[in-house]
Length: 223
Figure (cartoon, one colour):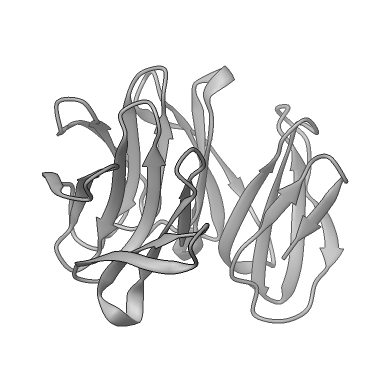
């Protein structure tokens, strides 16, 4: 998991095997700092707040570091096995999946949890559709995608994956109005339009897919 401070050309790496957050200077090609964390997972750079947000699976927290000095600014307890996180810059809210099945909502300015949505199973990758105030969350234990209403803070509907399981990575195909999900059993790429009632399109995929990235300019999806 990686994040970047584009203005300073700093790269933030959740170095899971090291139990550290590594901060790299891309211009100089060197490590600037290292911060000890227990099982670092998701990492984001919040440019509007000049903060680095990192989840610690071991501690069940979001750790906030200053973007300039890299000093610790806050520790926010969210729940066991804190993992992927996303940010809404308009509302200054962090969203993080954790534990046996929940999406926590965090006020990034105040530094506290302000809500939680039960998902019914351990969540993996998720994406925010802020235009329609919703989130899409992979829930492998249920072999489905939970569609969360962010305003109501509840699961609006569930999209079953049928014969496909181990749905870990996910990405929005920005500009295409679609969601892509990577499944490992069997290896397939599932693509679904975001409009209600649309079915998944199934594409061949090989290997133990772990992440998905979309290049909207070229229309290419990398798995």
